[in-house]
Each structure stands twice: as structure tokens, then as C-alpha cells.
Length: 83
Image (cartoon, rainbow, N blue to C red; front, side):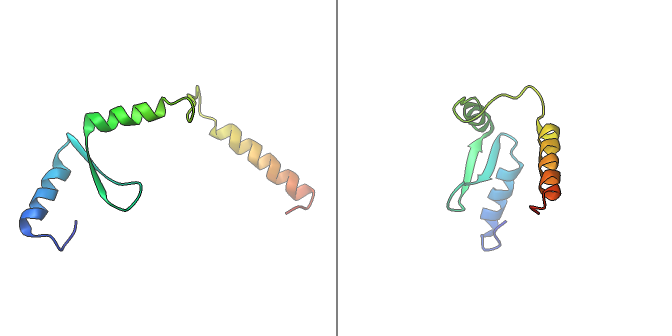
């Protein structure tokens, strides 16, 4: 919390943080704070995640397979003395 605020401003900020109906997030650019209504924030997140141009729904978690494939490539690079 900004210590340069007046007492009233600090109280208002504290009240906003405690309100479960809103979310306060840092803006993607410029470092500003953005205040979202919870419903609007969730709606926007779902809209973006449902954009098939950028996101694909995964049936399972691909991390273990990716990890195995990466380790195989690292081992091959070691065997061939690339690294």
C-alpha cells in the first residue's frame, strides 16, 4: 500500500482490497492499477481463453510428455557431445 496516501485514502484502498466483489490487478503496461468487478473479470478471462486463434483446450496435462521428450533431446545432445 502506498505510504504517501492520506489516512482516508489508505482506508479506502484497504476497503477495496477487502471487497470480494472486485479485483485489483496491475495493468499489463504502465504499472497502473486496474479495478475490475469480479464478474466482469471472469467474463473477460473466459472470453480470451475461449479464443481458438490463441488457445487450445487440452484434454490432459502435457507436461510429463514434454519433460520426457526434452530429457531425451538433452541426453542425445550429450551423447553426440553437442553439450
